[in-house]
Amino acid sequence: MPAAGFSAPARTGGVQFEGKITPIVIVSCIMAATGGLMFGYDVGISGGVTSMDDFLKKFFPTVYKRTKAKGGGNDSNYCQYDNQGLQLFTSSLYLAGLTATFFASYTTRKLGRKLTMLMASIFFLIGVVLNAAAQEIVMLIIGRILLGCGVGFANQAVPLFLSEIAPTRIRGGLNILFQLNVTIGILFANLVNYGTSRIHPWGWRVSLGLAGVPALLLLMGSLIVDDTPNSLIERGHLEKGKEVLKKIRGTQNVEAEFEEIVMASEAARQVHHPFRNLLQRRNRPQLVIAVWLQVFQQFTGINAIMFYAPVLFKTLGFGSDASLYSAVITGAVNVVSTLVSIYSVDKVGRRVLLLEAGVQMFISQVIISVLLGVKVKDQSNNLGHGMAILVVVFVCLFVSSFAWSWGPLGWLIPSETFPLETRSAGQSVTVCVNLLFTFVIAQSFLSMLCHLKYAIFAFFSAWVIIMSFFVLFLLPETKGVPIEEMAERVWMQHWFWRRFIDDGHHHHKVVELPQAAA
Ligand code: BGC
Image (cartoon, rainbow, N blue to C red; front, side, top):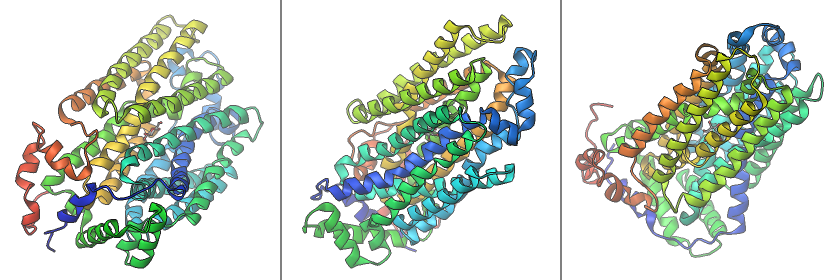
């Protein structure tokens, strides 16, 4: 299995081909990005639902009783929602999602991006029906598992679809479009929860059922879009591939780009073991960075807020209403701050955003921790009005800094650093690690809240320090660097990573050596 030559076509990717931003590109991208909407809706919906009495009464009566018990005092307050089953309701989706990415990596390659998105939407739709109609916990969890399969399939196929269909110069912005849709999905879910919490006793069914809206959009989208030229060509449909390329580029003059895709897919076909390829030494910097970015993104503690904000606010003594609309506020801050990122990421660069956010996240988490600590000390069960507002303000400051840094960049940086030959495998590893740690947070946050109490935010702030040092020393700036020049302009120049590139640099002249180690 000679690896010789496959880096050659990959490096021509920086040539600017004629590529208008045609209406069909816009429509395709909007449709595809609804995958992000779906993901976000699922992230945002569970917290509000688990804080609804009707839902708890039906599925988690023990938790319900605990939340209603009087005189539990502060300590047990933090433990009201500590229940493995309840956490499983949230987390099962991510567990299923990370398992599904492996299958999705196969289907995106063999069946195409379009069909994989279609499969995702069907998983979503069946999951939504089971959830909205749930009579027992089992039905609820099976529904969540199917939604998870949808997330695994969509998060694998959609970003690839977007980056393959977009003209090179808007690729970065389009990638963030996916994240923007995630945040809009979360906000939409928070708003829905706010409305349905007034409908008794089945408001939660509406919340879970409305996930059908983004799912239907994705279904329609995946029916009307064409598969990407890259995928068509890779699967041997050369003529169709060229036709689609002409259509999306809005010009007959696509010969050069077509040739390149043909060569690149030839090369991709040579890679029989994409995952093994990913483990080669010269691909180490991108792999290590992609993996750690996902771990760090989740250990900012963001999903403690996204999943459990209503539960958290209730734990702090907010009323039901106040909890749900506080979640709406944080959701809105999340969307707006993501726009800041779209605007500034190619101007100030990735590192500046990540480092600034490190400081802002650290300070807000420490202050939240102190505010909650003070509350526990004075033994009152509820935060005072002023304190409650302060907590919400600092939660918003935390969320906003996440939203212009780790949120979008956790996804953007891996997608722009993996070379073509490892991009698809790299994407599945990225998604998989992300979902794994999302699962870890979802499954453990309520228990951690119970044991660590206010110190939980100090715990996350310690992680923020670690990740900021990682960025400072180990994350090179990739702003404005074409993908095929990454090796020379980024990795070769880096004090640490250059050692991995040096020995592997002439790999295209060498026939692949038997790889001894991972
Ligand atoms: C993360 C999600 C998170 C969301 C919040 C995404 O980048 O991957 O886990 O819930 O941002 O906006």
